[in-house]
Image (cartoon, rainbow, N blue to C red; front, side, top):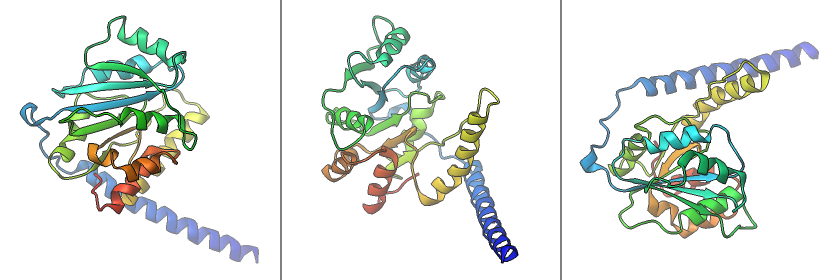
Length: 244
């Protein structure tokens, strides 16, 4: 009986391994395919970047510095702090200085929904008011390491009508050789092909069309959600929206 069980597990594992290799080859080919020209400055409409924070992060200054160095010509950054006394506020003040850049605004979460996580409440509050003309709303995590054209790359498919939701990749490069770091590294590299095939966006770096985020049907789902990425992704697919 045991050899049969072993054979069964072996066959299942082999099928899963081959499937994962095929998916990995597909996503690598996709990433190596030619990239369409990005938006020019004249084509780039206003964009809003939302960063929800709770708790201190010693690397937050790096994320904020990269945000201020984006080559996108017209964008604002809305930082949502969990509470007035949240430790993240100290890191934000240390990174931005006494006089933050005009493109940055810092808000404090005023209303916490009882049916979802604090981050979902912050996203709902941050997107309640979007300036007229804003064509892109980008979301990111506080530990994201952004390159200069990050926002321009996310905005291009949305502005050109090629997608309603655009997502980046969950790359994770360990800074030290520890077991937890390697677990996260292998988890990320294993999850990425499945997210690509199943059309799951990554909340750590994604952009959404504003009218989608302000649809009351989606906002009601966010009020009862634990994460924004799968919630937004599922809703967009139901509305026959495209994810890139």
